[in-house]
Image (cartoon, rainbow, N blue to C red; front, side, top):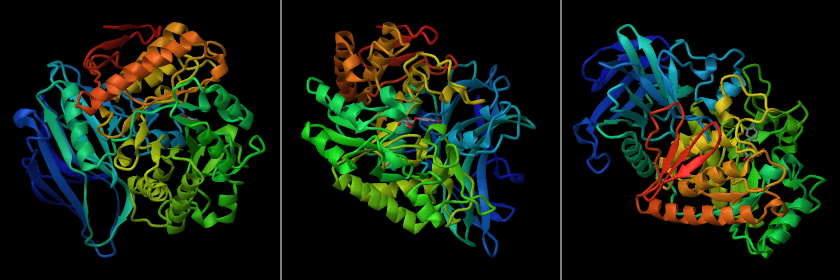
Length: 588
Ligand code: 9PG
């Protein structure tokens, strides 16, 4: 299989069909695209002569400027043997990572009943794809044919714009569109935007290619990878929204014999989505008093916020309607639907406008206040919100820049506190988060719970321990290169769960071997000696795997490209093989 440069395309329909060398200036309609050659430095990819890195830029060549949805380098895929397979890397934490067959599988946006609101949660571009054969991957991808020799194509960053790979049928066969997605950002006349470098590498197994790419992207993005290994407790996966202050105190009282560094209160304490400093009637104390009590028990206080969302009836939304992004008709932009949140519109949430200077001040102040009252660990959730199409105060910002501006404001306020990204567009947060959720939510069941109504096209994003396992394996290579991986919480209780002890063990071993964060999320009174022993085993594995990762031995998923979903997670010393159906596993 070979990839050959064919042309530059501006979405949708404007093209410069040049062929041959991509280097030089391409005038496409009202834009000038500059592509500069640069040979990948030897220290980046140890992959022989087949590694390339292209720097490129775009400028609007028209008085008054121009909006730009996307610009693509189009590569033709030639001499592929047999069906082409594509590693589809998901957009944000919960978006599934899998391997799809070109011409056979469909993009999730094609599913009957797929909703724009959900597409926007899981893809950089919320529109339905135009080609029925099209497969998409975000930030990076791997292509492989029957020769078994994969090619990696990836952007080296994602904080200036998203990067989407679209495998499509072209006139002369399959094409890979390497798309810089600017989401209709306004380019001023003559303004040149440097796009993220595009990297292409082959000649090595997929795990080696992924390791090379992540190492490089981590360096370029100044990844924060030095926080200590994290062990903790989180209130979510037992109490969910119903958590009370009594529940928190009950677990804190039981925690003495447990090895937790962090004790993290999740969703359910706040008066409203958006009003994070005011507690509801289930929490008689103020947030500062809660932090004090956790600190007095010798743990790092942690708290959950969804900083870019606002419930319609929240104080923030009603006092500052000008802080909300809008639809073109001027009504507030809706960026999430979660019925348990209520909020005045049955669970529809508004998106804060992270291009508005006052919103950024608010976010900085919010994070600063939470840290000042004692929370040294902030879980930042539903952070894809600023990426939706809409009307934004500063129209020059891309979706990725809007996400990143929100995170950067929080980092300014939080100083050196530990920031955990969640629901985070993965490519936009390198260099700002310390830890990052890399998979969907676990659940007290292995498959998707029967009561869950799976989202059309996006089943793989639904809470289930099996779905969490898939992304933990597929994104294992990111740990300590881009951030600390958060595979999501362990499940240890032996009551109020549908997980068998075998499935619990599989998940605990996966979390441990991944080297990622290890958080317990049960009512501690329900965890028996078996669960406690499993935690100790997972932490011992986790510390060893994490220590190896700091030393370059990041876990891998060596057979990633063999099946639709990964089946294996390997460390330097052992390998975990998981049966996706039964949730059983073997360690060798
Ligand atoms: C709190 C939770 C926990 C959890 C997060 C996140 O409706 N939804 O589509 C939906 C998706 C994810 C989700 C909740 C709802 O979970 O991953 O750890 O913090 O929020 O609400």
